[in-house]
Length: 154
Image 1 (cartoon, helix red, strand yellow):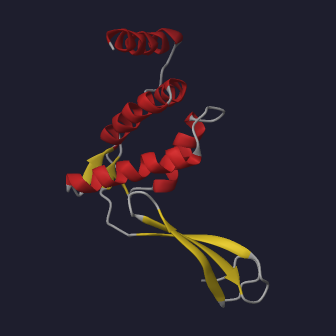
Image 2 (cartoon, rainbow, N blue to C red; image 1 turned 90 degrees about the horizontal axis):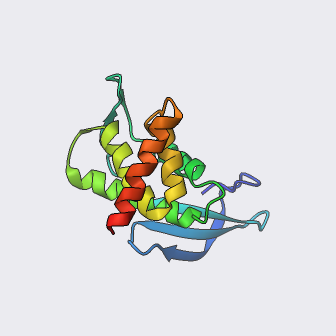
Image 3 (cartoon, rainbow, N blue to C red; image 1 turned 180 degrees about the vertical axis):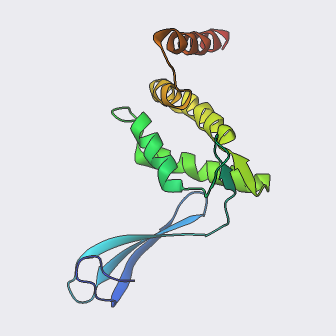
């Protein structure tokens, strides 16, 4: 592994940890030349399905894009990066288990909204406003009403 600070290839693993689902290994490394520490993550590389966009284009799954969208929705909310990473990990496992080669982005968007509704309602509304492309306040209010009605039934 190349040191991000000095570029040297000689380093040693100081500590290794595996996440709860046994899907990611976090390794703390120390460079033998500059003695600085850095972290690497190892995850099993699996083939994710292609996404079918609303305009019919095909695009590969991009974990970083999903994480970035969730971070934006959860900005200034009590949702940590660990929760976002776990959420995306679970989504990837679910998508892989479907066994499909191609999946509609609509399915992905709805699954993200379901998860966000449970994780943080404000983040859910933020994401929904972008995902559903609300054109005016009445569309936004009707989504809030649906959410409030759902909460009353619980």
